[in-house]
Image 1 (cartoon, rainbow, N blue to C red):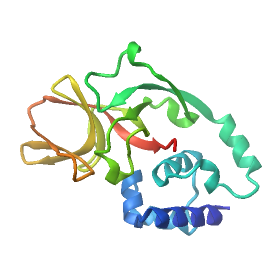
Image 2 (spheres, rainbow, N blue to C red):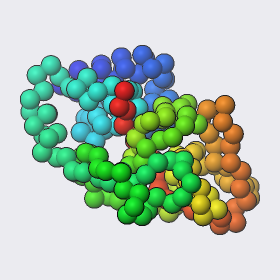
Image 3 (cartoon, one colour):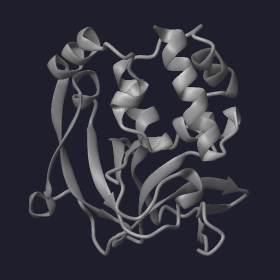
Image 4 (cartoon, rainbow, N blue to C red):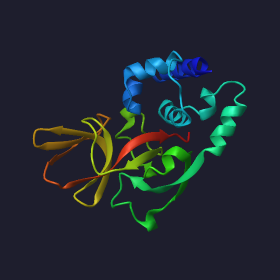
Amino acid sequence: MYILIGGKIRKAREEMGFSQHDLGTALGLTATAINYYEKGKRKVSIEEIYRLAGVLKKPIQYFLPHNPVKIKTELIRSISMIPVLGTVPAGRAFFTEQNLLGYLPVPSEKAGDGLFALVVEGNSMAGKGICDGDMVLIRRQQRVDYNGQIVCALVNGNENALKIWLKENDKIILKSANPSYGDIVLDDDGSLTIQGVYEGTFKFQ
C-alpha cells in the first residue's frame, strides 16, 4: 500500500515541478524522508497525507489506494475541528473571539496541540506553495525552531505576517517566498512577536 502511495507522491511532486528537497522544505522534512515516502520505505500517516495534499494541491483521495475503505473509515473517526481565527496578513492580532471565522476538520492527534487555521491574503508565499485564498495550519508557540522556518508573526504589535524567519547578525528578516514582494527587516529588539509556526496548507480549488 505504501508503495502505491509513494508513487502518487512522486507523480504529484513532479507535476508541481518540485524536487525532493523542495517538497521536504515545504513540509519541514528532509529530501531523504521524501525519498523514503516515494519508495514506500516510510509509512505515511493520516496527518502526513493531509499535509501532502495541501502542498501538492491534490485531494486527499488522490493518495489513497483504489479500494481505501479501511483508510477512509480511520480518517473519518480521527477527525477533530480546529478554529479558523482570521486572515494573514491582516491589520490586527487574531487571538480574539470576535475573529473566529469557523472551524476546519483536521486529524485528532494534532487538534490538541495548539493548532489553529488562518486564511491567506496575498501571494507573498507563493514560492512555498502558499497562495491567496489558501488556509494555513499554525501551531501556537512563541519560539522559532530553526533559521528558515515559516512563522506567523506580529510586527510592532499590530501587523500580522506569514513569512520565512531568518536571523542575520542583529537583524531579523521576515522573507517573502515571492520576488514580487518585499521582505520585512527588523532590529532584534523584541518588537517582533512569534504567534505560531507553519504546519501545513489546505487548498480549496
